[in-house]
Amino acid sequence: MHRALALLAGVLLVPCARGQDVRKEISKSMEQLAGKLKTFGERQLAIGQITGPANFPSNSGPGLGILLAAELERHGIAVKPRAKLGLHGQYLLANLDHPDFFPKKRLGIALTLKVEDAFGKVFKDCKDIVCTFPGEDAVIELMAPPVVLPARETPLMRDRLLRKSLEEPRTAIVRTKIQATPESPFAIEILVDGKALDPADDEGLAFLKLQPQKQFQIRLINRADHEVGVRLAIDGISVFAFSKELTVSGPLKGQPRHSVFLVPPQEELVIPGWYVSSKEWTPFMAGSYPKGSADLGQSSASLGVITATFAAAWNPQEAQPAHEADSSRLGIGVEPSSAVGTNLGAVPRKVGVVRAVVSARFKKD
Image (cartoon, rainbow, N blue to C red):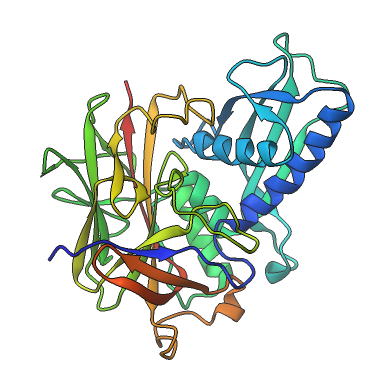
């Protein structure tokens, strides 16, 4: 059954909410970089390619580029398609210290950035800028591995499952549905002209054939007996990244108000495009992003990556479901949100830990 869209507003009232650790670390680094640039009279910067590991197909550079641009602009540096200096970099998997894992290392991401001129000369004392993001959320967000992470497993076991999904990825393809495992209740389908495409398995990852500049939609499928909140991204860019509905106060002021789609139990939801407002969507288009984002992280990479992250959702006035993790034990936190929809009004919800990541890849050329 298809339902009217319901959206979970990204009002984060607890620490360690998903996605914010990456932004927080990048904001700190870009503030320091902006200070150095302004010291030498530089107030413009171009953002070039940000690539991932060569041995695992990902393309989260555009999402990182948009985030970097926003933080640079916030700290007084204008981001231009053409400038005297350029910023480029690479994100890689890393074993990082984390208090939950002592004395073991936790899987995370290390982002290394460089500021250079057109000859590759490093600008002044702007040596390598290294941002580290320990924990599963950054790995999921940037690498998009297909994986099921049982909510009540220990952090160590979830870390092991995540590592295995990167070393030996496995995707279940059931006709036109893409799932992390055959038994998982969560899946996605990619639609063109109302018809679901047939994905192909390539070394454990799902690949699709999408014609360049062809519009498509994404169907989110929840076969569980509970609601789920689904984060949806393309090339590391949240589907809400271009929303006109922004948070008006607090630490997230100026950021998109919404971050998650709410899918009821045993139901499906078709996402028609990039969310602009409850009455406006920009169609998904293979090989391009919404107009106006060209200088904020556009990618020349030939690979596109669609990522759907599923987590349980529930009414904050009710007890946490027995099937949900003890968030304090996991050290991840539960995210309070307000769900709103075109016909539903405001629906308060909490969103739990990640249970499954479903991803699909496509060639842009």
